Length: 411
Image (tube, rainbow, N blue to C red):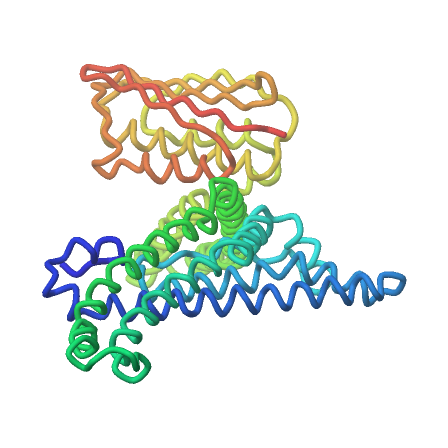
């Protein structure tokens, strides 16, 4: 397996290491570090000088702000340069600003911890690292070059003395390859330690992912409601009208005729389709949940459940829409699992609010042994609750009973 960074490359056999690209990549990395460090020194000194001279006008303030933000450019360049000697990419810790505009971007960047870490790295690079880079590179190039051209500048020594120095040049290059690569690897490790995203950056991104998931869930629920309205106000009403028209047509034909039998069969099919459509609408998004809230919707779901359900719903008033939707579908999914998998004879649903959190319990007297990994819908249920910052707990020992406990913040 090829080495992933310069320090790992040093563990290669000497023959492999010397013919690999690591010494040259390390030399290029250090040379670039020295040049960038010196350029940073001149640019920062220039910005501070201009800022000091023009501090009475806006231009001076702009120079000071540019100095503070200079670490962003140096950090971005360093993350790209590290690919020379470290194959593990260093991710960009900066997040996208919440809105457009230069002022928003500046305020957002100045509040990020990563901006100040990059400024700290830029300071260390300009004051210490670039000088060490230059020293290592100069020594690695100067000493072999001195040996190589010794016969040209050593005039007071015979050729028998200076020629061996020239012949030692390859050995000097071999020796120089190791400290160059070692310092390049150590320098990259220091840069990674400073520039690598910290837990605060990760937490911020996690918060953004959580909010994005919540927005997707909200958008999905809006779409469910739209589909429910379209089915309820469109297809369902047309099926009702079709059934009525077929009933009127049956009155116009002679009883016992073949036409009467066909119309009766068609009306039965229309009634079956209407019943299936109503069941589908209830599964998409029940209208009673939108109109009357969680308690009424759970009561209707319990009335359609295949097993008897005892209800103890101590929830008064309306809850936030995402909470009502999530809690309702938890109850529906749990009762569906009771009917399909538990062989229970009775179930119970309790709900109450304590300390600003909705507590919902669904119990059954079935055989237990519920396993989320067997496709019982419990994983999807947990994902739905997690999207509203809730928690799900499952207790289902073999032999039963099974309890699904859900808590959702109601703030």
